[in-house]
Structure formats: structure tokens, C-alpha cells
Image (cartoon, rainbow over all chains, first blue to last red; front, side):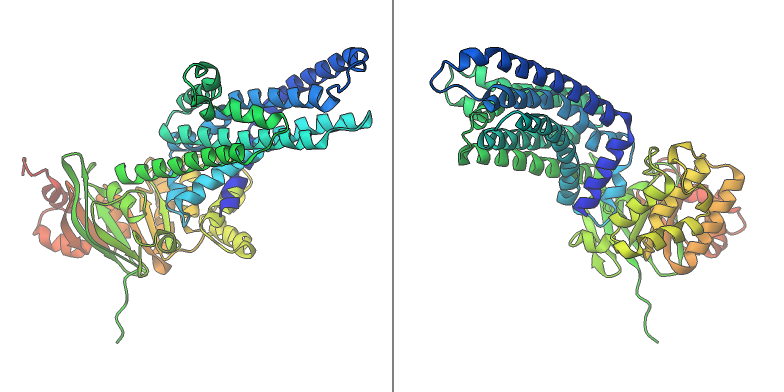
Length: 246
Length: 247
């Protein structure tokens, strides 16, 4: 049932030009950044060779590229997430799910997985670009995998957050704007909380950066897992409120 | 002789919106092979009743059993036996009729091997076979309404609930939809809401009239006619459903 809903989301997404245009534009931007990084790396190679322990191509090209992907996901995820519930509510299509033998958690999970799947596709395209560097030399696969899992977990968190904001309203644009605001807020918490101490632990950026340095520890994984689960559960509760409050 | 069990039984349903009671202590039973009409003026609580019966809205009190399964205790198991067409059809204009019905069949837990056959049958019953490959958004209102009914019957549920299925249609389309409902009523239990009395007379074996959330009549159209004592059905309906402060 969850798979049916996820497949429906993906199908509807790819049925509209939005997904294709977004994939094209993002790929264009990321490809330009990628080439820029590769160019910079090649330019610096002579100087790097003089260092005792120089940063490799993975660190110089792949990590910044995954960082850029994360930044782009931050902005585009709420745009895709807004459709999930808000648009269905506005088009009066939610009763199709509510009167079918499907539980609310299954609806929420299906919608979440549909969106996450799409975001993972964007991440896959980035990864393929990075993997093309293997033609020229070895890559630090550990660092690459850490970055990849960091972006994938971040995508899950952003998808859950966007889904929750989509549950709050019947206006997709409001869902998108507030989703972007919340994502940026959580991203920037790291900067504004420098003087406050402790708050940076809530920041998406802080946890993502730790992972992107190749340091995949349980605390950061748990943060993303908890973040995602919390917003999925909040989404279920908010959808149930539709039934209770009418 | 064994007693026929109702496909749907609702007891003591109540719902309040703020201070206003929109539904008060409603009891309702639907038997297999019966078309039950839910009548009343706008705002009488017809759609609220239907939303509660289909699990789209919670009731403040009471319970609903669909084929013996409590809707509030085990909603997933109860909804397997349920098909619902809301007042506004839940359609995706960007899907084709066939794609949409495949989705509806899967959502209603039709086994994967039977989905194709179930969709074909629903298309056939609702006379949609010719437009199966067309986008829903490009269809006329009448066809869209049929697609809405098709999604409610694709899994052959025991209980079909249709909220104003003929609203906004032209006379020819109304006739077609009525013929379809009559046919559905032979093999399923159907509840349909309308504020159009001739429709109820043409389709329903039994009617239930609501006024301001309260049931004011339950019985066959024939019984209602007898109660009218010489008055026209319409006068009788207006008299029954006139708001209390005016009556």
C-alpha cells in the first residue's frame, strides 16, 4: 500500500513538466559547479604536489559538490513537497485516500517515500558525475560514501519537514514558502547560535558538515533519523486532525 | 428464516461544529440490494453523515459498523467494504481514466492479479471503455462523474456511498447516472444523498429525511406519500424539512 502511494507520487511528479525541468536545471547547475571544481583542482595540482599530505580529488571536488547539492535540495524540496498534501487538499482528492483501507501512517509514509525517491534521483545524478572522475584516478570511496549518506539523510529530513508543512495548509504556495523558511532557519541555526551555545546541535548544517568531512558517527545519524521520524509523526497527527476537526 | 444482516449500521451518530449540532443521534441501517436515499435541504447534515460513514470525519458519539466491522475500531478492515464518491469527485485531471482506476483499485486492496479485470469491469459498468485512455481533465462533467462512481465501485464493495451523484449534470447525463445507480443497487447496498425529491422517488427503495441534523422521516417513498394525506410529495418534503423556527 505504501509502495502504491509512493509510486503514484512519482508517476504524478514525472507526469508534470516540473520534475523534468527541475532535474534539467539542477543537473545543469551541478555540472557547471563540478567542472569548476575539477578545473580548480587541476590548476592547484602543482602546488598540492608540494604538500606532505595533500587533499585528494574527492575532498577537493566531490565534497563541495555534495555540499552544493545539499544547498539546492534545501530550496527545491519544499517546492516538491508542497504538492503532497496541500494540493490534494485544495483539489479535494484526499477523500480518495481517507475512504480507502489505508492507515494514515501508510499515507504519510507513501508520500514521503515518493518524494524522497525523487530527491535520491537528484543525488544519484550528482554521484554519477563524481564517479566519472574514476576514469582519471582513484577516489576516496570512504569519504564519497560518507558524503552520499549525509546528503541522502539530509534529503529524508527535508522531505519529512516539507511534508509536514504541506499538511498544515490547503495552499501549496504557503506550504512551499514556510517549508523553505523552516529549512533555512534550521540550516542557519548553526550561525546564529554561536553565542548561545548548544543550539547548533539542532542545526541541519552542523550535522551535515560533520558527516561530509568523512566522520559518520551515530549521533549525527540519530539526529537525522529522529528529525525525519518526528516530522513524519507530526504529519500523521496533523492529517488526523482533518478527520477530527473536519 | 435467517435474518438478513445489514451491510452498514450506524447508531447514535452525533457531530457538533462549535456550538451548532450538525448531526444529532442518527440511526441508520442499509441492507444488501437496497438503495437508501438521504434527503434534506442544504445544510441538513447529509454530507456530514456521509463523511462520518466513510471515515472522513470523526463523530462525537455513536458507532458505525460496515459488514460487521467497527469503522472506528478497525477502520482499515471496515473500509475494504466501502466505496465513496464525495460531493466533489476526487479526480486527478493529469491521469488517464485507466491509470486512475488502477490506482483506486490498488488503494482498495484489490489483489494485483485482479486489478486489470476489476478496472475493465468498472470501465464497462460505467460505460467508460471508450474514454479509458483519455486524460480525466479533458473529459466532460458527466464522464468525470462516471469516473468518480467507477472509483467507488472498482473493488466491488458491499456498501457504496454517493454524495449528490447527479449534481451539475444535464438531463441526459442524469438519466444515465440514475440507470447506473439502479443497476448498482441490485448487487450492492447504496446510500445516495440528494435534495431533489423526484430523484429519490425514482431510485430509492427507502428514504431518510434530515432536518437540521435530525432525522424527521425514515421509510419508503410510498409511506411518505401516505403521510402526505393528499398533499404533493414536494409540499410534504418542504413541510418536513422547514426549519424549526419557521415551522
